[in-house]
Image 1 (tube, each protein chain N blue to C red):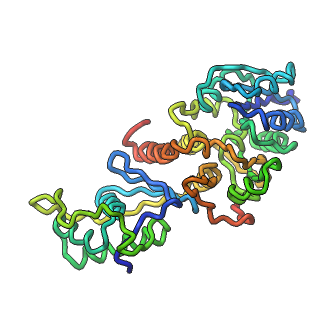
Image 2: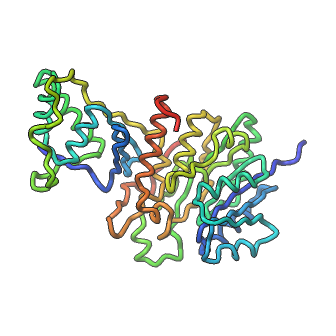
Image 3: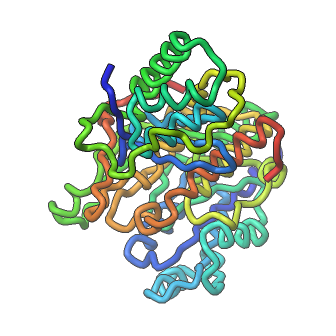
Length: 155
Length: 231
């Protein structure tokens, strides 16, 4: 697995609202929710943190077996990647605002580990794919969704 | 046999002079009758009003200062007298048999609340090649649960409620999400019920700064489903 990832913009829209990360994949019309530790991983990726930095921060923050934690994180990040929400990038591409190596927000007493969960929803696919938000924006390079003209959705 | 039900077709327009006449004509060309066409002009200053008024008295025309698509549609449903509502954007077209197909479905399914269909997109023929290339590829056939592809019974519409005037984009997405939460009895016809024009000024593109409204619409839907908040 790659060491560092970036959010797959402009194919992905995302925002953290009341602690919940809501993500839309404009290419597929699927949308996602991340809460708790999942939201923390997302904001770390957004901040340019690599796998090792996220794992290190989680080891400080949570009371969990190191190997198990590493496995869960890798699995979760793999899911984000396979859903097209993030993509690998080089260290040099990472945002200048690097994730703090020592997570200042880490509590003195580690919390029980609550594994990150990616909730996926496909009930709005047609509505999201039909929306003109997909049109190309000259300035910002809005994407052409990867949709074949022959696509058929059975009702 | 009872008289056929009146269908209200609602067109809301804000500076849509270029394509409005074609949209109106596509309603008049419907094989189903009787149809009442309500045009709400949301503060246009590009001559849209003059274009709509040329069709008087075959349609009802109302002008209001700009309040946004949701507010304009909400005014229109209050003014419409049909037993069924259908919404058409001022840049899109109804195929001539659209209402007939959807009303036939209602005739066969008296307990239905809403009939949707499929949508075919087309690149507006007035665009030059360079402008057309900037658009995404039009979909030949895609399922459409959006307001402009639906025919909804008046009571069912009000059961879901009015359009959310707090949104600039994602208004149809929000309404359809609420409709599915109300578990409206619906069918989706395999036929094309809407020809959707892709051009350089589609609403979502114009409202670039409002893209994150989509995320807020989905967040509200998630909260409602989880019963954490009723926004």
